[in-house]
Image (cartoon, rainbow, N blue to C red; front, side, top):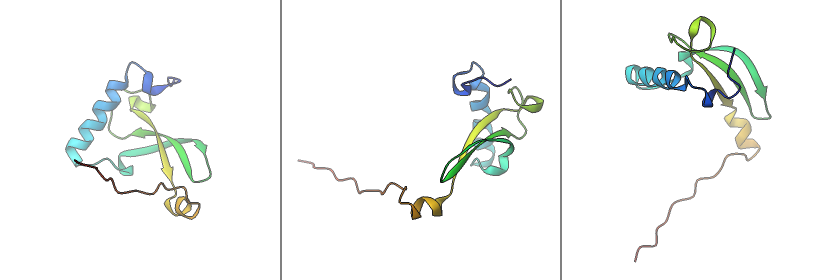
Length: 95
């Protein structure tokens, strides 16, 4: 059973540790590190999926894997609908 608010669960340290180990080993975290469990929701420019991190233990997912919610966005759709925040140069007024 999943915690209603996984980011508030007592075992969140297990998930963070799993992420840290993968990052140290591979230098990055990518979609290849996860397997999809189910769709949680969909909006006009993206989808939220429940995923399990491959090769992890001590979590609440199938076979004890760590579970995460991953949001994927369609960049082209976001640009076409002007939903991408534009970057403005940072200026400092030093005296």
